[in-house]
Length: 167
Image (cartoon, rainbow, N blue to C red; front, top):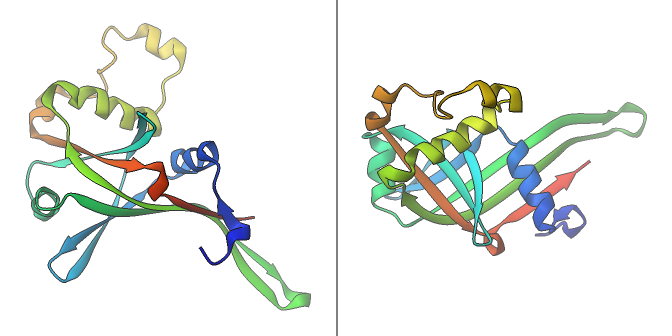
């Protein structure tokens, strides 16, 4: 990274940035052309690795590409704010970003509900009171949709991540 003064290296800070991002752009190889997808995602940790969790329909171009590659790249960013100081003629953008690569894997049917719950908790976390009222913690989902849903992850070694912050 050229601007090491903006580099974020602390593991907890990097994970905090990831958890605050709303969209992850997944980069796949489509022959000689990059194929980039903006996706909602969940985040988990396992054995020192970050796991990014995604879902989709069972078929389509994205699924076809995912099944034919082992490693994908990704980028996510947040906190965009223009900083403009007219008297100095200074204009810049504040942000936080994380980039990396990881191994694609597909969740086994027995693990799909847990992975989907992690995604749901990111975008719609329940209060402890709401959780206590639920007889089944997976009532977020229509059970009829689960067999039509592919859930996949990207296992990311922390060493493959780069993060940057400008505030």
